[in-house]
Image (tube, rainbow, N blue to C red; front, top):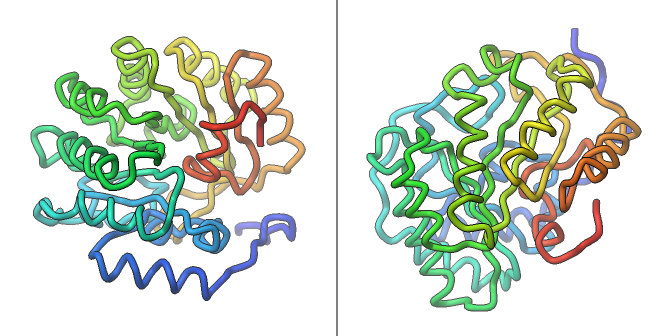
Length: 286
């Protein structure tokens, strides 16, 4: 039986702000991972007119056991989507935008060209906006990764999600080593691009495994590391073993900084794109 959610984990829901951004997304036929993944920070971020746009539809070709994004038959690629995202960025007056995707193993390039077109479209309408992309592993294909790198977003994020021993249960369709290789390849190809990754806690990982994951990620040259609490979307998803206390998150933040990450965001409510602009524009830590 899952323990009751602690009081310190509960957040306020700003219905007016959520509805305002949701109406714009519907008008432009866009998806936000904020709603698809049931992010607990949805109200706060929407109130600030920030959102993580999810391109390439809402149907994912993989079925990761932790994720609330729908697994199913993917939609055709929308050729107007890149400009629609740019229009939303302009209308929301964003200063930093995060673009993520459903995994599209059905596409030869994994969706890389749609990322590049979206970055280009945003730059054409909003040249002062900084851009972060949160990509799948794209099966580790270097040509696909080259396409994203050539678009030169300020940040390329690829989440490793959990510690290596838990991959068979949590990410059975992914590879720990392949995710590390994606981060390493980006940094080797263009060291001026910040790389970023993150993990979830509460899945049964040990402290030693978390620290080993930090060390493994650091070998890739990764700059930014995020740590947040896993929340089980439904009984069909992988079980959450425990709520991790804010004190332990704070300890991991300090350890990560001591180990050499440029920026660490670590608290129960942290998600990979939460306050992403701060990670890019500030030398402070959350």
